[in-house]
Length: 431
Image (spheres, rainbow, N blue to C red):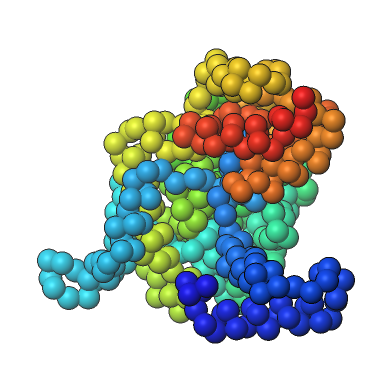
């Protein structure tokens, strides 16, 4: 046990002996030295086993928040490795030979892609929104439509973030309809910011209305206050190109006149977890100088991965290189072929049509046609649990008493491992 270190071995041995003393029923008879060594080794393995592990996502949910949202592209992984293994010019100007700024690494790419004047990257989108409100509207009123006071995953509520920032919330309109004059009335009373929040995984249908972002921007500028557009997902490509509803794009908000646009890096952008703030230099400069900006800034690994991801948007090979968009753009015919290959390899299951979802708080109720391998097993829920407990967990979904595996979210290089796990964990027991 030399590889574990003396202190850890001694502590583990003491714990093992203590457990047996407190509960003698754990063992039968007297334990030999070999038995004690085996028990201690087992405890050491358990202690050192990482809790955060790789899983194979066969659920069909592209941006599965519980499974880490967007998988990174190959170039992002390479950039992380190169940046992490040694020193980098994170805050060093190589031309001037003096201190530089970490903000430049992703900012220039973001501005090229969106037309924004300036930008800033922080650690997630909630932090981005909090920073904007704290820097520009503390102890002042922020006007927002009542229909946008939503709660997203993990109990994250827009009103709570606004309160934490020190801003004073002014709700306007009704649950289903908000007019431009509602915003104007609040601005006449002295509101310091207009905010629009994306509804995330909430969808309001029927008798509804909301002013266009361009109208809101024009109104805000008449009163010389900023318009903050919290987009959440941060699409840089038109989702309607892939048979989905149109998700508001970052470029559209910038072009429409929004002063600040906030969105996530690990949703439809397909990069690492990050909160991205883009907009007009007038407001971004003030945000950068707020003390909170340093507390929530992005680290070098995030900036390396994000920059590598953004370069694929400039090159124009997003569908081939960024996993999220490769999954979204995959045709049903190719998915059917992959599911049939699985069925033939396993000699088990049935290939049936189904639906994949985008997930991650994007495009609520929107689905993509797919084909899945449906496994008829005696106890689908317990079978799904066994797959989750495999050495490399496989995450499927149970529907109508069957375990479904969707090839849309399984990378081609994961197939052999997934099929091996299925063979050893489930298929043998079902025949």
